[in-house]
Length: 161
Image (cartoon, rainbow, N blue to C red):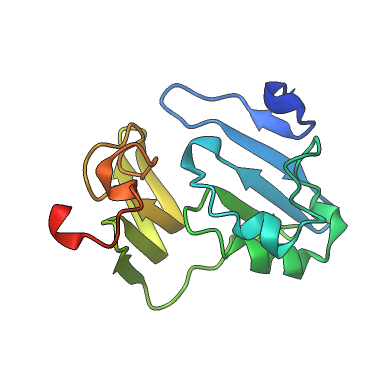
């Protein structure tokens, strides 16, 4: 793995394989945090929930050991897009919600949680949390990237969507 240079972070970054997304990895003693920048929708659940671990003004911006691994996992599970994920030191995977839930946001995005297999241009991926594009305009299909009308905050005017 190579040192991350984008944004000055010192987490490691997996070099993208052909057709695979860029993922930054922040390894801690009890938990490893991964971050996929293209999936981040800036809900800020991480920075509000655990600012000692997630601090955008610091490099690296993720310090997994700044809180108990269980607390880090709890806050990461609040990330609706799945841009943040975690892997406990014992190597187990993040457990999916059961039962699987699908909710359409007021602006049309599909917020899905559970044991998921998402097919896209990069192939099929196992997921536990995603926000899928509801308008078809995302440049990161099938994931929402806030580039289309389904991500606009005009939720008061449903008939215009």
